[in-house]
Length: 193
Image 1 (cartoon, one colour):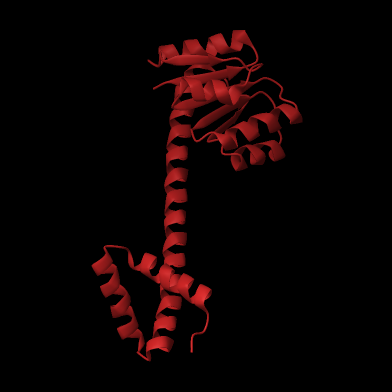
Image 2 (cartoon, one colour; image 1 turned 30 degrees about the vertical axis):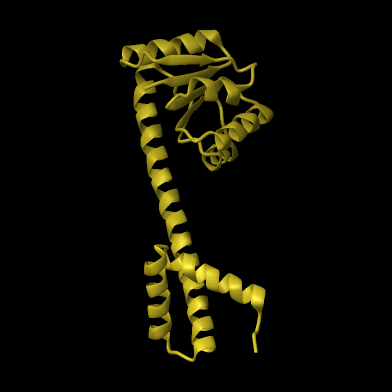
C-alpha cells in the first residue's frame, strides 16, 4: 500500500515514516507541502494520504480541506490542536480520520486502517445514493412516458408499460432510455393534432 505523507516538519515526517516502516508499510512518498500538493499526489498515486499539521492556522486548514475534497482517497489527518469547527470542517471535506494530539508511531497504522475502512464505507454509501437517485429519476421518466403513451394511444397503464418494455427489448436498450426518448420527443413535438 503506497502512502503519501504530508508534513511541514521533516522531523515529524521521519517519525511517521519510521512508524509506518515498523508496521510493515514501506511504500511511502514524502510530499513537499510547499509545492503543488494535488499534482504531487496524483503523480505518486497513493492509496492513502496521511497529513500531519502541528498548529494549523485557519487558512492552512482550509487549503488542506479543499485538497481533500479534490482527492478520492482515504485521508488521515493528525493535528496538535483543534476546535469543534475545524473537526466538523475536516469531516465535511472528506477526511476519513481526524486525530487531535495523537501522533505516536504505534497509533499511525491503526488510524490508517480506520481511515481506509471509513473511506470505503462512505464510498459505498455514496454509490448507493447515486444508484437510488438514478432509479428514482428513471422511475419518474418511465411514469411520464407511460402517461404520454396512454394519452396518445388511448391505452391503459399496463399496456403502456408493455409497449415500453417491448420496444426496449427490440432495440436492446434500457426501458428508461426508451422512456427518455419518448419524453424528449414529446417536449420537442408538443401536442400533435
